[in-house]
Image 1 (cartoon, rainbow, N blue to C red):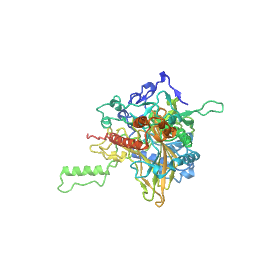
Image 2 (image 1 turned 90 degrees about the horizontal axis):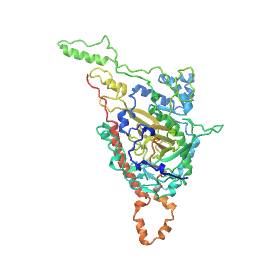
Image 3 (image 1 turned 45 degrees about the vertical axis):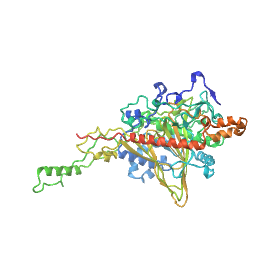
Image 4 (image 1 turned 90 degrees about the vertical axis):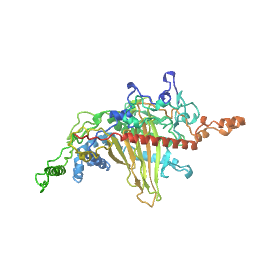
Length: 608
């Protein structure tokens, strides 16, 4: 049902009766950090700890182990553990700790930040329901299939937020009520045109005009477009005593309360139900992903490093002074030999001591018992009455014997600041006849290396310890996560990510990979959503109105007048695709700017 607004709840959203670049007061809560925001970059809120390569190797080993079926039981089996390699044995204490968390949450933090995965959060029955419900979007004539521009006919868009987005100066907003799922379709054409934001609203509030970051991204907001989320409400499960029960790990009932952009609610009701169930399960992983950005006790040192140390040179085997060689030349040659034979001491992991555990977690008492419970956020608590906002995308990558390889994507961060995306959930619900595929991540880091003590002109340690060289961008490749069928994967918007190349297993047959993408709007803010924007689609509008009868009752001159003002009517598919190209062009420029800013800061090992 729609709900009327009172004067005390007059609709105010960024871009409508509120500046597009509005910043919340502390009483409203602070936004989660993002790699799109200058202040988050400069303050270090979106930066990670500079991490030794050996620690990334440890995390990758644990990622591989936790891909194995029943890993959470196998790591306690002495017979199985005796067969595993020494590298895995060294990670055994932390793997047991992760097993305890997995039994509580059903998910695993793969990389600090946090990148979180689960192969059990979404049941097989829900996966099959989603797969069946999506089929009606796929089984359309070829001339109706919407392949993403520039994808060489490989990426099929089923539901995409770049089609029929909010267009400032064109889209209409209903401000006296919230539109429910049905009204979003039936109230087409109602509302006021959303004005184009003024120039000063597409810059950051209080931006430092001398900031290195701001010099690269002067306009982090779009003056033209915004992706539109749907609204989601939750109801807490009830105990045997009739009391509501909610924890960070409960899969509360979830209901989409405003329609998903480009997904007709009556024609695809089954798909709505399936997406609701997956959003409900994504909440647990989002809580794990975002908690380290609020509570720093989630991050601990596996391998500490305070600066380069080297072994003493061998006592024998050094150079001898040659006949006629000057003292200076000999000394230089001897120093070169000493430098070449003083090996860098690589840091070793310390004894694992778990910092703390999620509430309700049982842990093996034979091992270190945490002194306290970890604090976790619950994104549902940030907006209990109003729920969450989620942008939905459904897309397939199709490979054929003629086009057997997908070349991968480019490094990027999701959205612009208009959407206020704080985290992403990707559900890989169907894969067939493709090689292993991965999603890779990288992050800006705090430059602790430049303040370490090192010998004159000794820069090699930076590459050996951290995988970087002097004057490189202060960015580390974190690693990749396999995108296997049935996996739900979440990560925060402080990372850049990209899809790695993959191809057909059997190049004589076609193959595909299908995903559901859910972009979580920061729950500390509300943006214009489908609860405010009636459908803009001309084809949906025509289905609602017996248009021929309406026009037939008008004099011919009025018919021409009505049809000559398209901006007051829904948007045709052809025009929507033109808008999409404009949006893609704008965001490509923004992505390039963000990419330059992401890599702007460099390591600077000064000479002493």
